Amino acid sequence: MPLRLIFMGTPDFSVPTLLELVAHGHEIVAVYTRAPKPGGRRGLQLQPTPVEEAARKLGVPVLTPKTLKTQDALEEFRAFEADAAVVVAYGMILPQAILDAPRLGCYNLHASLLPRWRGAAPINRAIMAGDAESGVMVMKMDAGLDTGDVAMAERLAISDNMTALDLHDRLSRLGADLMVRAMAALDRGGLQLRKQGEDGVTYAAKIEKAEARIDWSKPARAVLRHIHGLSPFPGAWAEFDNARVKILRCELARGSGTPGAVLDDHLTIACGDGAIRIIELQREGKGRMQAADFLRGVPVSPPMRFG
Image 1 (tube, helix red, strand yellow):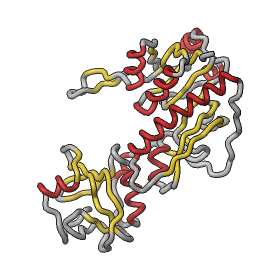
Image 2 (cartoon, one colour; image 1 turned 45 degrees about the vertical axis):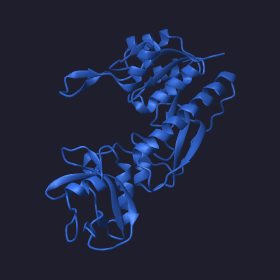
Image 3 (cartoon, one colour; image 1 turned 135 degrees about the horizontal axis):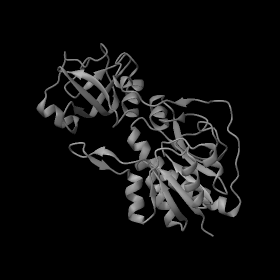
Image 4 (cartoon, helix red, strand yellow; image 1 turned 30 degrees about the vertical axis):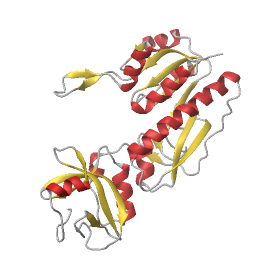
């Protein structure tokens, strides 16, 4: 029998899970997402979230409450008489009364291998820390920050050429399949939960813009992982030719020199140990472009440097 589900999510990452739950026959009785924000070319038009856009196409009721802590919000949530709630990057804390409302509980899809990288930015932090793998986990939610009992997991290797967007997209698809399997097991009464271990707990703090400046004194692989962990947003940057340049994709390269120094005319840049070669970048106020296109308009060669 299909489950009656409330879905709670906001960004692109959440949409595949919503679509897969519908495709597998579950009844989505309501979708909760964040309220539309100003956007568009002039920043004046309200832009619905990707989850709201998907829900509207499915004909599912959409709710955008500013808080879930009021009695009215709780009664509205309870009125849907959901078997369970599925939460994927919703962006709002669920109070205990909401967590207790569905008959079978609330289940979160988290983009890390818990207890590593609890918190807001697990995809970015895993890449920036040089982790060899990441993954997705289904967790029964409690009042803590990603501390609930975990049910199922899928792992994914992180290669050096993988950006945050690359990992985001792969985990989003992997997570959608995992949540569908978890809800099938929950429906059968066969979803097994286990407590998270206390060893290896780390926290994925929200990315701050101050972190985005590239430190060329670090080893090349650390520089590469920093760049890829922040690509495409907010974008790791350096100063070049009196302007800010975001570097969006790079690769390890041979060479050495003063950190930040241009080593050749192919955008090979020296790091504290080794070098990287820039593949894709974005000049301040311009669109993203391949390094070859950039070099056609801006000749780069030694002894120039990235600051």
